[in-house]
Length: 284
Image (cartoon, rainbow, N blue to C red; front, top):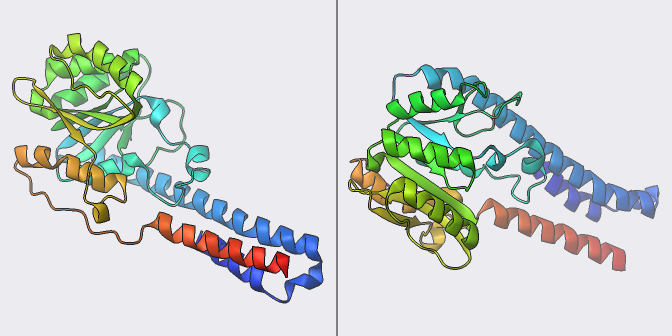
């Protein structure tokens, strides 16, 4: 990806390329850096998938505490979504969530049926359609913490029902990730009879944060907020949101490092430099 960015600058500023003719020069300027960027994104993603596959067995068989992560399969990143994302050089929210929650234990999830390589993030357990509910029940009984992504699907509501019947309230977290206000309201309406309490209201915009519970099932909304120079990533915002949960479990909480220049900022600057040099060459 870095080579793709740098080559854009080199190609657009090199005096030797015009001998190939303007059409070939423009193709090289526009196509080669783009191909390298996407090739780098693909290799990065594939490498993270193989790394996740290599670590699954040791995580699943480890005697250390596990955390159960339940989410709709449609929220998983695919190769196409990752490579063609505007954030293809960043780790996914699930990878960052697993990193934030590592002081509690390793994140474990049910794998998407039919996938040849796991999605990076939580360690995947693969099961059949007929058995996955039993696997979820067993994992939930031994989990130190269960994180359920909010959604209005039937399976998510079933998982929430099992969590209420199995877990102590403090061991349940509901992750609300970029939900439209109307979708969150729909989830809140359907979750209320299951939980026996009304979840916090959120009226406008998109809703992001965690919902934690006190011993009497009283809910609290932990919004994704962080100081300006520490708010550059999902990981930073999630870590600040989860500070009360760390403290309730007696775990040490430390602020994430200050991020003055993010990867987004770096690649934006490189892109602007390439565009400026290309524009200057075309006009001269």
